[in-house]
Image 1: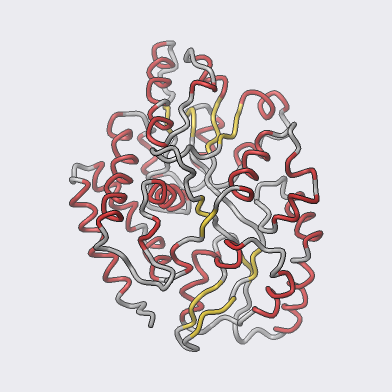
Image 2 (image 1 turned 90 degrees about the horizontal axis):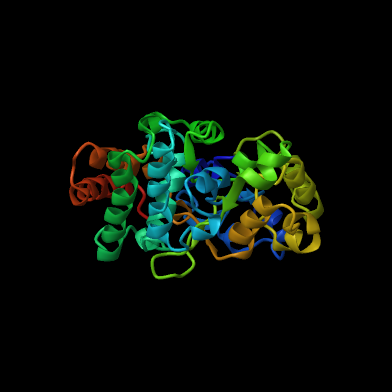
Amino acid sequence: DHSSDQTLPPIVWKGKVVDVSDVVDTQRHEYSETALKSCFYYDNVAKKRSHYGVPLKGQALMMPTWRTLVEKAGYQMSDIPKTWDKFFAFFEPVQDKLRAKGMRHVFGLGYTVSTSGADPVNLLNQVLFAYGGGGIVTPEGQLQADDAKVQKALVDTLNMLATPFKKGYVPPDALNWGDVDNNNAFHSQEVVMTPNDTISISTAIMDNKQLYYHDVVTLEMPLDNDGKKVPVLLSVPQAFILKGAQNIDGAKNLLRFLIQPKNLDIYLKEARARWLPVMPSIVKNDPYWLDPKDEHRVAAITEGVLGPTTPWPQVYNPAFAQVNAVHLWSVAVADVINGMKPEDAVAKGLTQTKRIFADYVIG
């Protein structure tokens, strides 16, 4: 299930999912620490944490960019800054210069700022972590709504996503984008760069050698504003078994077979490496994954497998999955776009977040 890392925690909470620790244990030594943490959920009926999902693959936010448009604007790819705010600000003058050259419908930034689908949730939460808001939920499942660092990170997040939109550097229809629309906007050269949670944009053009090997570049996330690595929010799609399934033993046997490293390797390669391995040995043992001829794949692996990664907050408390499901913070971005002060939007959003968390008390 590609969205299982969002949908699974609330189902586990209700005691409806089979504990699959015995499946995960067969490859525990192979999985990354983040993969193991990402399927370790709280069952409020059994009053325990355990492995209720079987990690299959990973995904992390990447930055596909049109090299040709950057160069047409008079820059080189090496001119793109390496730190967070400067990186994204770079694409505003790129838009200005492309407009001056007659490209009237091009935008520098392909932010998805809608209130539907996974892309706005993926972007917003990764931005929150980049600004230091990763402690919004503790590993024990407690919401840190009154933490000044978290509140400032939320304000910075809303400002980053709303301000370029209001200045005209994000397509107006991005307010209504679904998950495929930023991809489509990129492929039609409506946007110069768009954050995307897999390398699906590049894999879609893999058969066009000019586009794939030259015109489009997949960039890793920039460093934070202090020049440090940003913790990569690693989404981990998982297989799970619902209680009441007719053949639980058969399902477990199938999963034990599937998660053998050689089998996951084949599966992920057949998907054109759109998804990341969650077992470091796959990358170590198969030169396909770090083939220097494929810069897109190398960027994805360097960021999402070899670099520092962290689980999503809903691993610690399923309330955060509900916050994402109702797009609570995407609505806050829309509020700021429509004129609300970011501080007021944060206060409103945290009040609503507290109400959701009140239904998921752990301990």
